[in-house]
Amino acid sequence: MADLHKAMSIPGAFAAGEFDETGNLKNYVGDISLQAAKIAALMCAANKATARMQAAGWTAYTGKDGFEPITGFAVSGPENSALIAGSVGVFVKNKDADFDKAFQVLSTL
Image 1 (cartoon, rainbow, N blue to C red):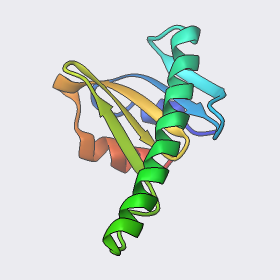
Image 2: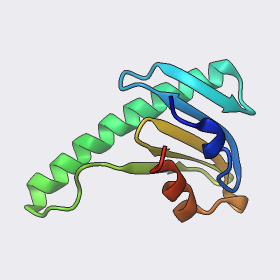
Image 3: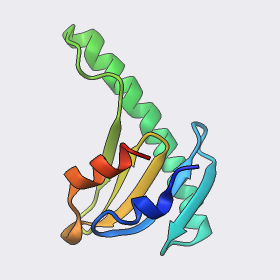
C-alpha cells in the first residue's frame, strides 16, 4: 500500500487515493466521500489507460521516443486538479498547489 499520508503532504492536497489497473479503489484518505473516491479511482484508471494509448500513438506517429512509458498526468479544472502517478492520485486546490513538487512526491510512493 502506498503512503497516502505522504501524498497528503503535497501543498494544496485535500484527498488522496490508491487504485488498481481496473479502477478499483484500494485505499483513500481526505475530504471526499467514499463514493467520490470510488469514482475517482475509475477516472484515474481510465485516464491512465487512455494516456498509455495516446503515448503509444504519438510514438508510432512521430517515430520519436520520449512519450513512453507514462509516468503521470494531471486533469485540471479552474479550482481543483487531480494529479496521478503510478497507482496513486491526489486532489489539490490549484491556488495552493505546486505541480512539480506534487509529482516529485507522487513518484516516491
